[in-house]
Length: 456
Image (cartoon, rainbow, N blue to C red; front, side, top):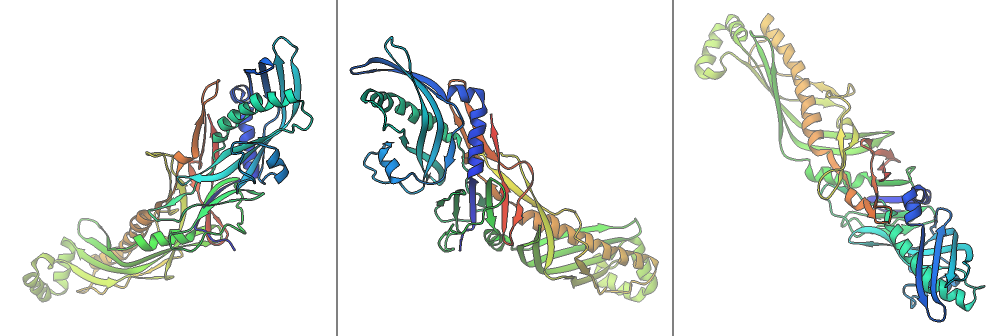
C-alpha cells in the first residue's frame, strides 16, 4: 500500500504530448530537430553529416534490454547495466546523409533510441541523457566511423538541448512543514515523485492511484491538518455595533481553544471548526438610559453611582453555543498568479459566502444585567442577537479561515520553468496551475491540482 503526503507526476501521455508540442513549433523543428555538421576523419577527409528527425520523438517508460544497453554508445562505458529509473526516448524516423569530399551524398534512414535516467538534484527531479542506440549490425567500417564519431555526438547534443524542455512537475510545499528526501518511481503509466512528512514513516509509491490530470501535484489531508494543528491557536476577537441614534447594540466575541480539521465530503472540502466562544454584549444609548431610568429609577441611580461609565447600559456576558459541533465550514480554493522570487504559486482557501452556511445554527442566550422590557430595550436586544450572528460569521470566515486556511499550498513554479537555446531563438516551457478555481478532491483524503503547459 502506498504511503506519501505530497506527490507530483506526469503521465506517459502528457510527456509525449509535451514533446509533440515542442516538435510542432517551426523554430524548434528547424533549429533543434534538423542540423548538419562537418568533421575531418582519418582516412576519409572532410565528411558532412545532415540529420532530420522526421516525426516527433516519444517516450517509453521502461528500461532497454540488456542486449540493447550493451550495444548502445554510453557516456559511461563502464556502466554494465541500465541505471535505476532508466527510460527511453525513441526517434522512430531519423533521416540523414553523409557526404565525403565531393562524392554524392549517401542517404540513410531508421530509428534511434536515446536512453536517460530520471533522478533528482537539489530536490528537483530531472532527466539525464546516458546513452544512444543505433542499430549498426549492417554497417560497414566507414559507416560505423561516421555514425559513432559524427552523428552520435550530434544526437547527444540534440538530446541534451531538448531534454530540459521536458519540464516535470515538482513537489508542492505545505506552509513551513518539513518533508523527507524525494522518492522517485517510474512506471509504465508515468513518472512520479513523492515524499512524507519528517518522522512520518517511509515513503512508498507502489500501488499509487493516478489522478485524472496528466500533469499534476497533490497533497493528502495529513500535512494540511498537521499545518492547521500547528498554527490554529491563540485568542481571536471580533466586535461590532449597530443601531439608530437612540440606542446601540454592541457585541464582542472572543475565541479560544480553537481546533480546525480539514476533511473531504464528496466533492466538497470542509473545515470542521470548534472552540470556546465567549460573548460580551451591551445595550446602550440615550434611549436605553431613559428606558432604564423609567423602568427602575432607584436601581439606575445606584448603577450611576457605582459604575458611572455603564449606568446607561444593559450588559451581558455568556458563552455562545452552536450546532453541529464541530462546525463544517465549506471552502473552495483559488490559484493565484505566479509571483515572487523565487517564483511560486499559492493556493488560497476561501468560503463561498461571507455568511455562515445555513446548516450551522448559533444559539444565543444572553442574560442581561437589567430588564429589557420596553420598546427601546426590546428592539436593542433583538438587534443584538442578529449582530452576534454577523460578528460570529466574520470571526469564523475572515479571521479563522482567512488566517489559517489561505496560501498553505504552494507550487514551486521557478522549478517548473526552463528555457532552452536554439538557433531560431530561446524557447521557454513552464508548468503552472490555471489562475482561478483550484484543488479538486480525489478519493477521501487527497487534493489534486492540474498543471498546464505554456510554451513561448
